[in-house]
Image (tube, rainbow, N blue to C red; front, side, top):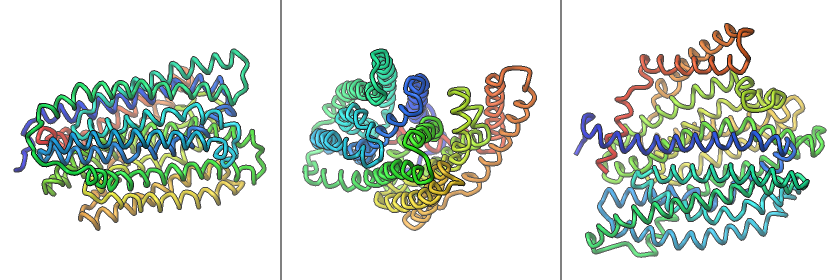
Length: 533
């Protein structure tokens, strides 16, 4: 049965937009808190101390992904399928099996990380990062269990508890991380230990975030399962549930782990290739700290805005594909791609053209000057990453969970090869790192688009996804540039940048609306299926 565009405008739209908006707002709040956290932290630790902090966090990210990357997606997909088919008892059994499995998995991965901290610190060429790795390791246990709960909630399009959990975790990281960093510095501790105390805030934040999720599950999901108990007499066996869970989770985890492992290899490669062209350890660490503290967070900010759309769309795509509604499936996928391009393209253009004044609003001018060309080189990867996220989400929802693994693996290989040669070239140096990232996501996107066409027959709308957002973003950038020059010498450079960027955002929204890039009707294609589930 098809649903018309007029059907359930209030219920479906409210559910979809409420959930997606709450996740987006929470993600932005967490990123803002992260910037607020890193600005004073950068002043406490300096570039060298931030190098220890970010080196440890890069290694931690790999173990974090092993524990969580595929879990929320797999459980969200399985929950959405059960919900669409009315299999409530199977859904409840999935929850129980997953919680037991990842309780054990979280303990094992945390223990492995703790045992390997010193060898890994030596491997990446940054021995002093080991204490920081030890301080953040316990968070993996709580995040692994939290991933199961996030998947259950996302499968029901109940995204507000996830958003609340992320916000609480971000506040905990900020409050305790800064407090411990300042106390450690006041006591005259060495930089590696100050870095360790500061990152321990992330561990405490993960504990608080897990408690919020646990309370949400107890009050919402468990009650619903009890109300529906007995409606289905037959449930899947534990073995079959585990088989399905890992069938989805393993490829997703491996594809995410490939990119994280690539970042880990990238870290060691950046340091060693910089050594090869004449930098000492302190200089190389400072350059890496600048790149990962200023340029990469801006890239990750775009990823943070895109991720909630992917989370919200995944159960909708899964449910439509599960009941054989291919036309609706393609419509949701197309709208998701257009929304991703609408959000990512202007951010990439603005950060490429106005990176230094934007960074100077948040960081010391000298650090902003060093990071600006790195951010400009990284900007195209923001668009490629956003589109790749949506294409891979579509493939996963259609059951082709191994397809994204191929594209991510090829992209990772490209990143390592390009980075190795360019960073070791004195003309490029650290600039080779963002160029390698652009090449990685670009190649991965092309490969995933080819796989999407081959597996489902879907073709990306090139004009609405690539060309129209780029044209409108360049028009907005022109307005930003004109106002910035007009205000030069009249107000401070910071105020000039803020006013000019606000004008650019306004111009982009206006031309996008009248140019057909952003219309409410397009978003209703997504929202109209929410209540149907």
